[in-house]
Image (tube, rainbow, N blue to C red; front, side, top):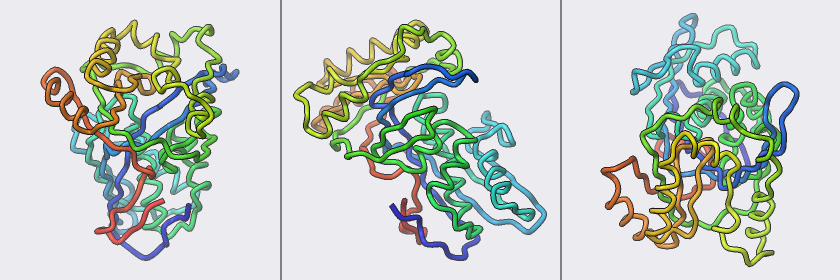
Length: 307
């Protein structure tokens, strides 16, 4: 994949796709407390929008968001991404206004904060003609959040380590996906704190890689797994209810993404997913998404390309 050609601009809008964990296996825990994972991550067409505008020198970083309860200072990953980019390039005069418009639900296991940070890194590299490669941006991203390196890459990837090892793989079939987000907040830190060592060592990721390379006859419902699901179920029992409903309405497989509580269902027919949404959209947030091959990108109308 090629980075976008750099050119002089003062304003840029970047689209930031969310993600799901098609599989999530926990391999162990490092001495510093970080969990080691193995996961197949997939970009989804649920998208936040980040607009960056260069300001006069000396005005520093400013941030605003259409969700007023989110931090609009250094507590926001977008701000931290801008500061990390500034430090990496040694820029004394980075002055940028960040406007964040949210579509990806907050605290949903869909990577919203991480993909927003990825969009800031990607956009600043264009605004300031940083000339950084994808790999260099991912190295910065590691310092911000575990999912940021994947969100910069996007598509379908094998993700390992604590999230810093990202390897593009054969694209996942372009099924239609329904996402259901129960209206119950989940703390990722709390889920990992409760995770028992007995949950370590799953092999769903390897089995999915076999599926994608036509080396197995197992169904997706047999293959897909998430080591965190049993923990989140104790906190949000509704996760199981929504999985059962998705399967009843024709989904081939249904699992939880990340630490939850969002549940996804994979449908062979888009109409089935839309029927499910029409039936249940008053009981929870239900989104219908497709599976793009990029994480962050500049819309063509903005004069850009994509990773």
